[in-house]
Image 1: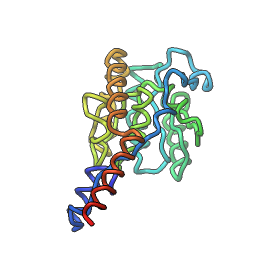
Image 2: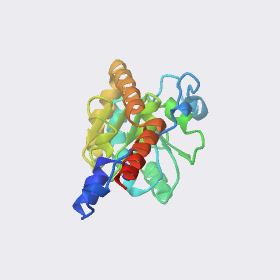
Image 3: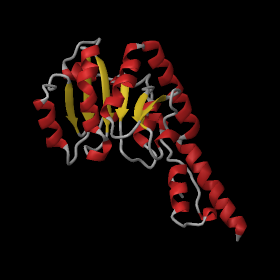
Image 4: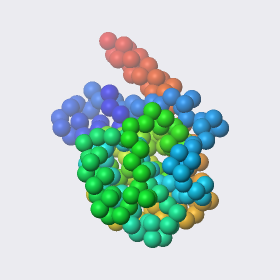
Length: 231
C-alpha cells in the first residue's frame, strides 16, 4: 500500500507487479484543523505588527526540505514586501547552518526560527503563505495540513507533491532546488489577498475530499474486501 501514485509508479518501475500495489493516500484527522477555533497568534508572540505578512513552513530542518531555497528568495521578497516575515517551525541537523546564514545575510529581523512546536495548527493558522520547496516527497502531509487550515502553498513540482498541491488551483508549484523560482509565486500570493484567500479555500475543499481519515479507512476496507474475495 503506497501513499501516492508517484510511489506506486516507482515500485512498479522497480519490478513490483502492479497487481500487488495499491495507492491509499494518507488520511488526516481534520477535526483538529478548524479555523473557527484556531485563530493563530504568532504575530503577537513574535511582537510583529498585525498587518505583517507571514510566509512559513513546518518541517524538519533537513537540507532536502529546501529551507535554504527559501532564504535564497527572501531578500527579493522583502524588497517588494517590507512587512513580510518568514517563520521556520521545526528543528533538525540544519539548525545551526540556517541560523548562521540568516545572521550573515542580515535577515535576523525577518526570518524567525521557532524551533520544535507542538501547536502546529496555531502556526499554520497564522500564515498567509505556506512554503515548502522540498527536494523529494512521497506525498507531503505538511501540505495537506496547511491546506486544511486554508493556507495556500508554494511547493516543488516533484514526486508526490502535485497530487496534494494542484498547481494554479490550491497552490503554486516551482522547480525543485531553485530558490529564485520561489520569488514570483510567493509575491503573487502576498500581493493579492483575494487570490490568496480563494486558493486557500480551494485547498481546504480539495484535501477534505481526498485526504480525510475516513476516506483512508474506506480505501483500506475496500482493499481488504478485495483480497478476501480473491481467496
